[in-house]
Amino acid sequence: MNSTRRGFMKNGALALVGTSTIPGFLTRAVMAEASTAAANNRKLIVIFQRGAADGLNIVVPYKEQNYYAMRPTLAIKPEQVLDLDGFFGLHPALAPLQPLYRDRHLAVVHATGLPDSTRSHFDAQDFMESGTPGLKATPDGWLNRALQVESDGSRSPFRAVSLGGQVPRTLQGRIPAIAVSNLQDFAVGGRGPSPSPMSATLEQMYAYSFDTVLHGTGQETFEAVKMLKATNPEKYKPEHGAQYPAAPFGNSMKQIAQLLKANLGVEAAFADIGDWDTHQNQGNINGRLANRLKEFSESIAAFWQDMGDGAEQVTLITMSEFGRTARQNGTGGTDHGHGNVMFVLGGEVKGGKVYGKWPGLANEQLNEGRDLVITTDYRRVLGETAYKTLGAKNLNRVFPNAQVDPSGFLNIV
View 1 (spheres, one colour):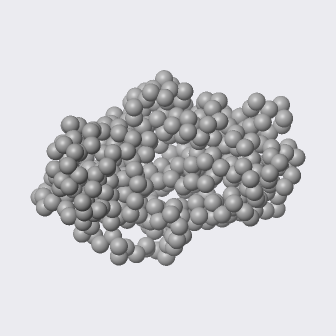
View 2 (cartoon, rainbow, N blue to C red; view 1 turned 135 degrees about the vertical axis):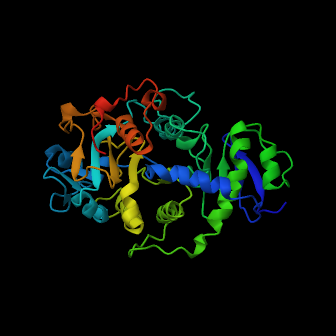
View 3 (tube, rainbow, N blue to C red; view 1 turned 180 degrees about the horizontal axis):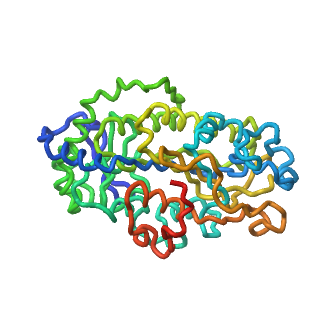
């Protein structure tokens, strides 16, 4: 079989990758859908830091004396932090984000996270992406449900896009999502059985799916990909002097910028960055964590710069499955914790502020005597961004039993 036309099943989602042969369909329907999606003119970008990032060394509570007592070699010294408000400061590797905070485009939410006691990466990520902590049977992701609740059935097939080899848990569900490893390859996510003749054309592969969602959008999706390729994505040049790191996450953020600028009706995009599980040799201002933060911050700052005026319609939010222990361990690292930190970046974000109630780091204030306490359910932050960016008004459907309500918003956006 030609390797540029192949189908496979993974995690119940049909994926079609490598589209060197695209059927020729009329463009009228896709153009109309892209225009419909663009009418709202707002986009939500979700970034997942997989591996449990150390929020206490990302946004440092440098006025907490016990922070230094618990981290004798890992703590960021007061003179090394990039001050935010006289109490908190950024890790120095996050220097590219400091101007965004100063210009009030970037907000911080501290002591936030998953209201579940699990310290399992697998379970915590599943709960955060499904939006239903403690419930493993949830069939779809919170972001897919956020797109469903206000769906009018006539949106662009590029409405939901993930940068990666498969559709993540966050975007799985009734609304079709497209996974893009790079803009020369793509995957179409949806639920349905695997096509049996592996040599089938892309159109025939769709015919073997029993999912009505796929039947309803497949033709337009392929035409949308043809339209995307017509923009010569391999020749894309970032604008406004933006320089992305030559690394996977930098490439993901660059491609999200490309997709948004292509005006294909993208409303929600997802990307992740891994290797945050710093049990050993975490480092302080240098080392493993600092290297992750450098790529993370440089990629996000380049994206913001590249988008230019278009950044005003974008809201970007970051999350990680849980934080790390307040005390360093015996191998120069930190172990699985609880409370963490989130960033919210955007043109309509009320930035330049650290949101959330700070619980303190005195020994008696720690969760189970070892972690930062969670004072803000992460779903309050996601719910506000989905409500105000995507127009997802039915938050009970997006986050069942979470009691996420506009009256409880932190008013970040």
